[in-house]
Image (cartoon, rainbow, N blue to C red):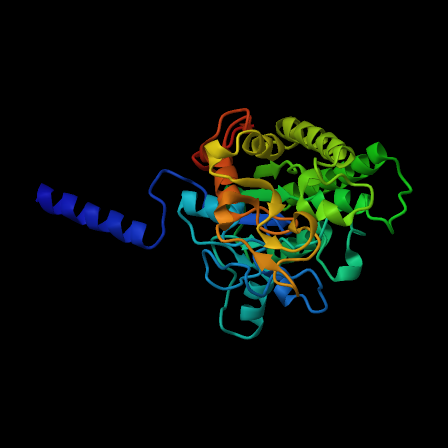
Length: 364
């Protein structure tokens, strides 16, 4: 009898594993993702008139073996974290919505939804002429789902909310045709006001587990070759200074979450520091090139988008920190994901995503 019981339990465990259900003790059923191209899984592909696209080869070539709308050669951070938790990868909101509209699905996925839109920022004006979806509109999309009861309130309460945006706002501050009306410090402050307002709103809609990800060293992206006055032999210090200022403000917001939002927890992913560690010790992390794009053209491979006319692609993408003029390679994303999932306080604080995923009840 006992033997049969054990056999049955084993079979059930195997079925759960086969169905992608995590048996590792994670209490997180879903991830809801908001942000820009670092997380976009194909929303822009569905955005008519949107010029920020990665839905053509060779994007996606090393993992999905086809373009998915992700701005890299494979998976992004949210994909890896989903795999670590043991849930399927999240669909872009626009895809999930179109399946409901055309009747191929009757409800939104229960493993979360990805609202991220490449090219967007935390400021509503950022790249709005490119047809991208700013974080405020991403929030409205989630709000509509919640208010129309398309998502279970209990699911929302136990889910992780990933927020990662701001790189495009800061990069655009340095564009030659942009005339700043604010000082760099005031501009960063205006960005942080938007992030705080986003947190207020998403908390009211039932979100309780927040992961806010710092910006990486935006001043080091190969696309800086497009900016007049940006150095090519080193990172753009002025830009990274703004990034650091924003990241400090972001961490401050995270530190205030428990006091401001009862029953909520938040973590700050120190992505900037993590990427700088890779840059300081490339061989240790499997990189042979931490400055140029694997796929692109021109100075640093930063002058032409990957896949556009005249581009070239390197033989070994995962030895490159950057896949294209703006975005990390899948290898970089994987390393960042591991640091966020299981890293110590220098990588993510006050605790890592694995700890957050295993929290059973959230105490005030």
